[in-house]
Length: 384
Image (tube, rainbow, N blue to C red; front, side, top):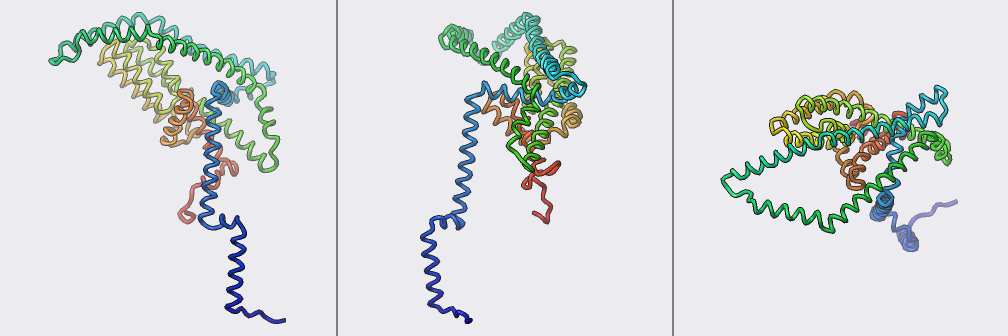
């Protein structure tokens, strides 16, 4: 046996042969750095296109998707109750009916409180608001400059009257009737879906897990358990915090003799499910009612009550109840609220934060119990 000795001529021939093979292989264009960048760009475009398609479908089917998500979140919230009744030997259908009845009664009670209180105190509030508006006009007339003339006020009233009697206002009223019809349809659909989630939720989840095997099955089950825990803990914790806020503000409004104290307290409870923004909106509404009915001094006291209750809730109650169920930065919450409001309005803003919390919870158990996904693990200085 001998050894080949490379000569400049053989090296040149081999190089030419390699170049020829490269030109004959189209996939070689994707092997260099620019080709890898192009592949990554195509992957990103594909992911964005799929996400846009999903968002489009969700927006097109909000009458179905929103009741479905709400029913899922409520089912997760009442899952401990259902599990407790099942362990006590109660038939599944009876436990489901009792839980569903409790949910409907709670939602109906909130709506009845708002309607009853507004109807009971509306005449008083209307009289006080009209008197306050007249006082405001009288004060404006005492200003040294011509801020508002009676002719201008009459023109505004005529414009408002024309709008109310116009076809545009009528079409808006019809749109409102359509919105009410959609709400009723969505509520009935939500109750129906919730019934099946409460009754057959575990069986439905097992059916969805059938395609998975081995480690993938274990991961999917772990993700499902974590999602149920996070969503349930978020709803129960938020409801408890909202109830404490509503009771505290209700006591303050009753002491200050602010009209519509009960519906304002119910509104505080409902808006508490929109983090950060909800408390601000509730405080503004309560202060406006106090300003119109009782004057600016009383409104300042209302603002003080709202700020005090929110500070006590934010610094003591919320970290204790929701410290484990929702570990999201305020920036993430604001982004989730914005995206949810753009996609689904007020309902989207309410659902965005628990969905974001559930997604973060899934990431935290992706590789195992208490073991986050590799890219989400904190890095030590040596690893970084």
